[in-house]
Length: 150
Image 1 (cartoon, rainbow, N blue to C red):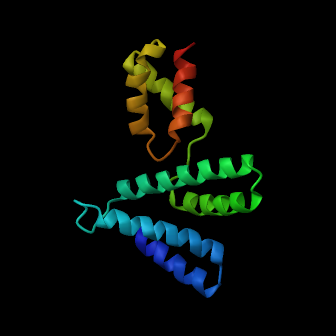
Image 2 (image 1 turned 135 degrees about the horizontal axis):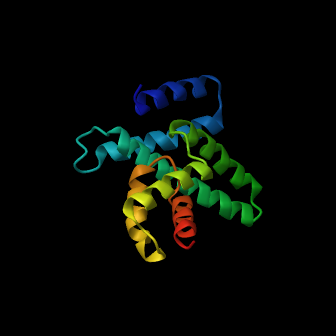
């Protein structure tokens, strides 16, 4: 089932159950779908890669806001961001754990022959492509730095 159809079905359920938190998150995702479909060159159709890209972007925005609200002691706003993060996560592919990311990055390092932090750009390019949608860029970057500085 396409993401848009899935969102619409869940929106109907959320409206019936009067779940405002769920409905708010679903409406945010639906707005991004509409925005992506109306972008120049999209032709009213979006592919799965584009869907994943904007879901990742939404997740990063929510995560950043959550951290800021938590630091400022705004538990009410942090709770809303957390609810939306949990919802968006449902539509993203399973995220890799630290050990899985390390394994993938180590394999890339051995394939490229990278040996120093100067080779980080080469490794990051490949790692970002291979782990797209499965790992956060910050996590990948930290692991690449760690493995190349050994």
